[in-house]
Length: 282
Length: 285
Image 1 (cartoon, each protein chain N blue to C red):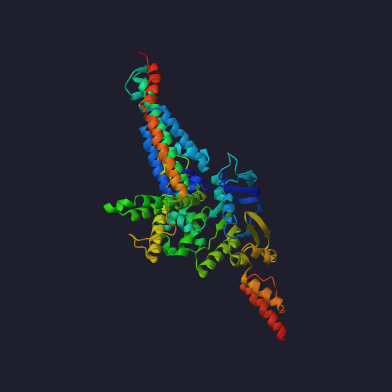
Image 2: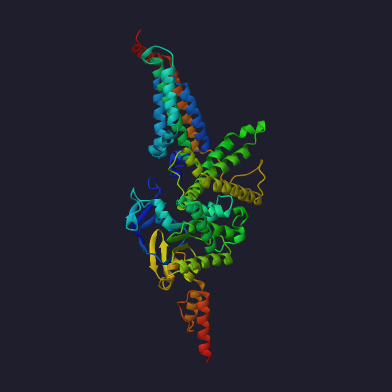
């Protein structure tokens, strides 16, 4: 029941995308998202989609797993599309009651739909193909320059990796406690919302107790291994750029530059604009 | 009412590249009144198996029947099944949540729809059965020792008055004295009330002393299902499963191998001592 939650889920397999340095993937996602917001015409989005699908294909992660992440933000997605559809001023297509759908609204709504969907899919690719530990390592190293501004990057990265590490443990614990209470006749499904919330007390209390116990144990274990945080900590598997990472960077940058150029190129944009405006009645 | 498992299989992560077959074609009949030990190495599927007994998990293929009804049926009353089949999880003290012990033990019977008074009577009865110290009935669960917490948690399941009591590693993390106290208590429950006990363990010592039937699990399959004596004749195979036989049985067999006339099928330290004593005194005469 609890296993349906997919935050930070990692899909175990071996692929080119899995083997890439996490810094490449993080920077890549960032650039991809920026690019998505720079496109001005459908050609840009089409290129972005092709790029995204190629990466998904290369990652060997079934498409099902990636679209699963979309389910969680379905409400946000529908809401954004509807708001843009009805509240963008412009030439009316249809209007009923107090609501008006405009040509401009359809355009903006479709753009937002593509942007958000691709944004979510693009970022799920990173978490699906990178182990949480690798991800924090990548962040720690990638954001290392912030140390100049006295940001404790190492400590923050440690906190993040502990937090990420605890997600599956606590989920498993929740599952176990829920089952133990079910075995004692607890009922989590029936009743109204107040009753359902009350039914969670027998799960939440032991869960908090166990989280505190685990945190205490972990702190003790870290101290016993002389953890003192701060600089100079070495890694067992330090991140080193390989040839494939350089290749990935080249492909990535060229994709972003080319697609943004095409996506904003006045000739192409003008072409699409003329098609678009031919729909709008004068 | 017997529990019947008919060709039950359970597969985890079926839709990924690494599916795990936790149970592989398990067929068992668990009649009422027996004291059964389920034994297996870590990952042999024993914990998965017991979760099928009260409907917490449903088989991916195969069927589980209670009272002649398939527990996977839509109209099957799982709550009623859980009243009859009490399951005590590993480290059951982690499920305690109420402000005091007595209130926590009342949780189960209250869920079964008993009135406050009936629930309290059932809780009182259960706490007495597990020899819980009277002066601690209203203590906070955080004030208790490990063994006391374990007893309180077992009482929480016992208070529902189940016909089957399934205990998953009830002695895990306890010291030897605490272990035998818990096991003796469980054994007394079986003798006094005729309750069916299913004891899950990875320790042959624990199981050999008490149970009348041993089910050995190995990689999701039932490897043996027989009396302890019969099962322990497969010493080599058991070692291959990472299990081995009780120390006392092993020593008796070694002595037998050296030509001393002891019973090679002893199960407990007491039996071994008696048998060795008889052999030695017999020879001296």
